[in-house]
Amino acid sequence: MPAISATAPGKVILFGEHAVVYGFPAIAAPVTQVRAKAIVLANPLGKIGQVEIDAPDIDLHSPLSELPNDHPFVVLFSNLMERLGVKVMPACSVRITSSIPVAAGLGSGAAVSVAMARALSSFLGHSLPNDQISDLAYQVEKKYHGTPSGIDNTVITYSKPVYYMRGQPFERLELLHSFTLLIADSGIKSQTRRVVEDVRQGWQSDREHYDKLFDLIGQISRQARGLIEKGRSQEIGSLMTTNHQVLKELGVSCPELDRLVKAAISAGASGAKLSGAGRGGNMIALVQPEDADAISETLRKTGATRIITTRVGPD
Image 1 (cartoon, rainbow, N blue to C red):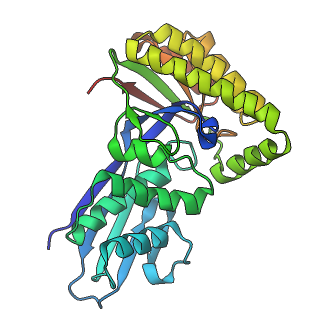
Image 2 (image 1 turned 90 degrees about the vertical axis):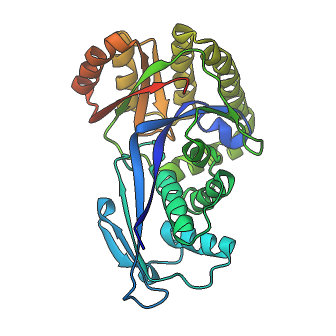
């Protein structure tokens, strides 16, 4: 039997971080320049139920049976097998690789889950539709991140820019024009679960203040949707910068991200903000294509450890 493979892109949140967890809208887009890949290969000489996991990027080489029950790979396998009614896995090996930076707000965990779910379901002869692939990845996200919004698994599964509100069907964004983003890594690993839990604790202790901030972020996301669909990039950039200021007040930025945001704008970006959980990870800057190289160089000098240039736009 030939090897079965599947890939999934990274993602970037354009607007709505944290507020999306509390029922406000967010906007996200796929980042196809980076991807996770899963390859499943049958092992005809192995014992039934023997699954070998090889994930060199995280230095993991282990039988699935020796991983803890709460490991994301174990959670994905058990949920997938239950959904398909598979009692025992055929002997196989699963290799997972990814060019998506870990703990940087680019959805590396969800992308790995989506790629694995697609490859494994195909290997088992039951290729699943996107809604079920997305839900499988969401179940892993819940185990790993606590109270995820669901936006990561959604935008990564469908690989389309989306407008998303928790508990409601996502809406695909119809873009009139494309726009260019620089995604700059601060070099600090962002611990999504801890940041999300800290925000929740803050909200529980001062709901009035946090609800005002979430509502403001929600208003920004709604405005941004209209501007994105009309291709009004200069105004989109201004909203990004405003969104960053609210996230700073929410307590999820850090000096390194703030410096990158300031440097991008000073170098000519239309706007910039942190993207993802914050306190590390990435910031994004909206730029004109002809300015991308010069602004990238400024960001490197300011401390960015990696920069990805991506285009968001019509198919």
